[in-house]
Length: 557
Image (cartoon, rainbow, N blue to C red; front, side, top):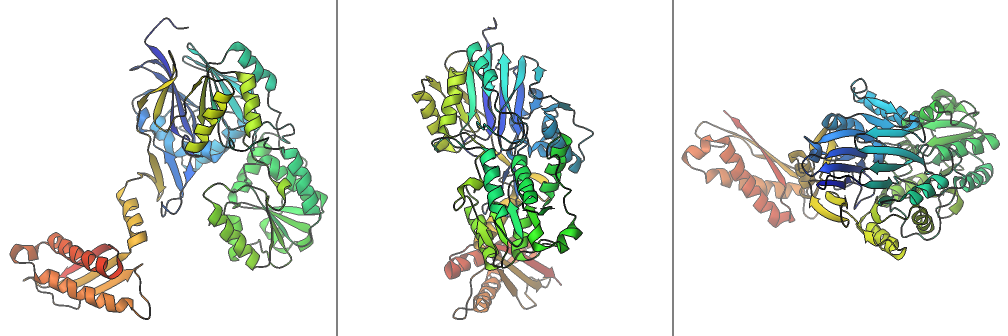
């Protein structure tokens, strides 16, 4: 133990606690005002109806400004763990540590943002060690739904912390080694101060299941089908992609990739020796003309993403993947919470084309989760035996239930932090000692903006209240000398109550508002615009129960 009694070891999530996704975790050691920090994972989450026009959301790393950041360590290559790196690295500017598969993919992301030459990327071998100031980090091989997932055994002068990252216990993972149970047991024997652990499936009893059983189920299903076959899955699940490809070959089919992520991930997989001994993928031109009973399309978009391959297939706009009556689409993936409506709409559009749909609900063997269920969590706690349990990677009820499970297993100290909660792990009893800013940044128009930025606020407001655009001409004396044109966007109207009738009434309100202005007010465009906006919002509230955005254009003659 360190002799400096003012040293502390703290854990600070800026993303990934009280939510699934957008993981960004910090570990700090040292005196309160001179801590050294490491970052574990820099992930994204994705926009929804509450963020119109925004597809990608990142954590806000503002807390790190001016702090002593030693390095960024990535546990694995899922988007919710690496997707924000290219956006946020300029605000961190620290070396990045990753295993080869993950390093391949982050280089591609950095290249897209013209940052590749600026970022120091240190490839760490599987089972390797990283030395960063007071932190000695050993990589521990785990299993998950992507190659090279790593737990981090973080040794500090205060004690040992195991950061699990995402994991499961898969006895037949298809790609990579099985979970290193011996290494985990050895950590427990050494003595673990705290375990920071995945909570995604804490409400699911039993075990997550094996990719080996999925391979068998997919081979059986694909081998039984006639006509064209499409399979939607996460591109990052290389084991699943490998299983689909081998099932296709066994059924006498060739595989065509549909979606940029499919091409990028297969390149990364082959760079580290995975997906070997497969037939070459069909080119786009070959896929257009290949016989229906001899082709399988491996597609992005299983979550209903509007611009992904499966959505374009469902809309009939994909350049070379065409599905119709007598064809099949297999969804070898789970529904991520929040995506249910988008997935349902996608499957409806495919069904409307005559495509038969297969999901884990009617064919349970075609998908397994990549996260630990309750029996796997129990086994991990039996191996590690930490003094402190810190659940992460889950919404609030998941974290609280995980803490309850840990207590049932005899862990006396548990902390279920929210984003921004600084948890002191040592010295003393584990507790939240501070709260720091932990907001979100939106990728909007190719740049990062705050979640309360003016453009986002206006877009949200317009999406629920509509827009009125008013234009008219005035002479130098302040008299309106043209027709008043009022146009409505996103406002209600029907045959019984036409929008045009309401707009005519609003034009009268504009004229009255301007007539009520006197003297110098008629010379100030801002005063005129404010008066028009007040009048139209008041009238709109009465007509539609809406307060639209009002844009006024005044032409001076």
